Picture (spheres, one colour):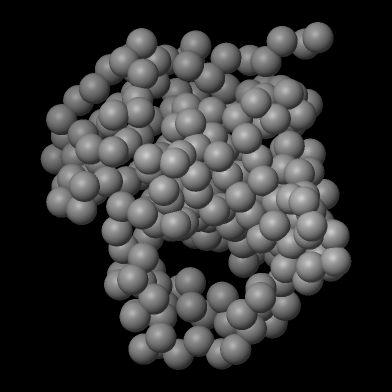
Amino acid sequence: MIITKGNLRFIKLKEEDIELVRRWRNSPTIAQFMEFREYITPEQQLAWFRSINNKYNLYFIIEYDFRKVGLINGKEIDWPANTMEVGVFFWEESLYSTPLPALASLVFSEVGVVYGGLTATAHILRDNHRAIRYNREMGFELCEGQDNVENQKYILTRERYLAKGKRLRKAFFTLINRDPLTLLMEPEDYAIGLAQLVEERIDPDSVESIAETPQGKLFVFKAEAFPLPPTR
């Protein structure tokens, strides 16, 4: 599966990229914000990948201007209950002070929360102030009883995201709304039953075109499917 919006792409994690992810996940700059901070071996990484390479976990390499810059995920998806846990990290520190982290989260939220109908939860260490700040701006709220927890749980519903995240969504659409959003379903997505679950949630009226390509089934969404939020 590949999701594309302008020069931003989410490419479903494949085995060929797990060593890249492992190397950066082990770096102190990233590990300090993770609950699990022990060194991850290649064997552990491979076992982890095999455990999440299914229709219940979506891990994507974030590619920006053809550079692999981070990882974003929706994991432990309960399709009947419409829930998932999300997470993201970037390994290019030069991007931390740019709009990209927020943009990546917004694209992911638009696809999963708004159009996929999934309620998102996230765990954030209480001293990760940067992550807490922009997740709150998107509409995430701290769950009850989490004030004194080290790895705090936040929740984001579709309704709260649309209401709370208006300012960020307007900036997002202003920056990249000119490019259509596309979704490529690859043969492996059909083999594991993921594509069928996603296709069931796609509103036909939001799709501009569907094409069979050598790489897989390509959905191109209408611009109206991702409308500019009202200014009021």
